[in-house]
Amino acid sequence: MATEQKKEIWSKEDEKYFLERYLQAENKQPQYLLSKAFALFFCNDPSIHDRIVTLLDKYFADFPCDKEGRASALQLMGKIYYSRKDFDKTFEFYKKAAEFEVEYPEVNCGAWLAYAEHIVRFKKTEFFDEAEKYVSANYDKLDYAEGLYQASAILAVICGGKGDLD
Image (cartoon, rainbow, N blue to C red; front, side, top):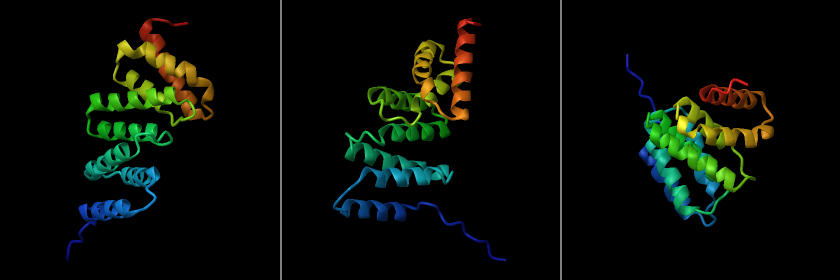
């Protein structure tokens, strides 16, 4: 009985081909890189995270002024570092994404909520005031139950940590 070999989701050859095609394109768009990076991330294959980082680094280098995708790209980098258990880098990227959303309020991918959650998750009590500020300032923008629950839980943990039981 022959063993079946599993095809790699995003081989070095696939990456090379994609980047060659991208470089040849006359009208380079940031969403080409971001779409591929997100699609690969959601394949749930940590072995290709380095290749996703390559795409994101290319995005950051080629499109430093792109506002639409920047917070999402920063947050995706945070997710990659979280999967690698590099929590300092995770925190750094989530903070950058949240700060970007503050600077450009028309851009909202929920990075501020993820950042506040990481502050609470990693018990970074020195940042509790900052997390509370983000959640309080954006709470009314949440229009889905999961986000409201998450924001309320974050505020409850912060208030409990401060001894503010009211």
